[in-house]
Image 1 (tube, rainbow, N blue to C red):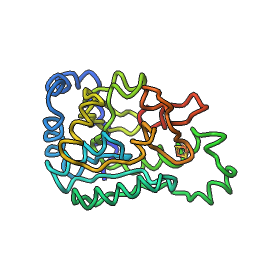
Image 2: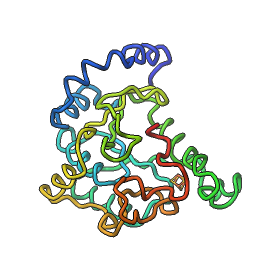
Image 3: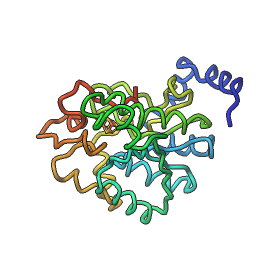
Length: 240
Ligand code: SF4
C-alpha cells in the first residue's frame, strides 16, 4: 500500500513539467518500447485497463507477450454486452490472461433503491461515477501507473492524449502507448495477429460500453459517437 508521504513524493517527481523528457523518448516509437519500460519498471505496481475494444485487444496482446503476469482489469458495471463478456473469455483463453474484474461497491438493485430505476437515463454522470469512476479510483489507489488503450484519433476529447501523463484524479502515471496510432493501425495489427474482437464492431457499433448507453453509430466517423446518444456526454469520467 502506498503511504501518503510516498504518494506526495511520487506526485512531485512526476509533475507534468518532468514528463517532457520521457514523452520525447517514446513519442513516435513502437508502443512496445513504452510498454517494456513501464512493465519492467513498475511490475506489480502497474495495471492495464480495458473495455475490450479494438485498441484494448491490441494492447493486451502486447502486454501479455512482454510481461505475462501483468494485471489487466476491466470495470465490471453489471451492464456490459454479452458479446463483450464472451470476448473477455475468448481472450483469456487465447492470451492466457486472468482478467481482474473491478466492480462497483453497489449492486444495480441497491443503486435503483438509492437513486431510482435506470439512473443512466436521467443522470449518466452519476451512474458512471458510481459504477466506473469511484471503483477505478479505489482499485488504482495502491498503483503507480496504469495503461490505457486510448488514441488521439478516437475523438476531439482525446486529441491531445500524451503517451505518458499524470493522472491527477487518481494520483498516478497514466500511460497511453497507442496514443499516436490510428484506427487503421489497430485493425492491421488485429488482422495480422488474427486476434478475436467484438463482433458488434462489424454491426455498426464503433465503441462499446454499457448496454443501455451504447447505440449503433449510424455512419458517424467519431468513434465515440455510439455512446450516450442524446446527451452531451462523450466520456465516462475515467479519462477526464
Ligand atoms: S455507461 Fe451508462 S450504464 Fe454504464 S456506468 Fe455509465 S451511465 Fe451507467
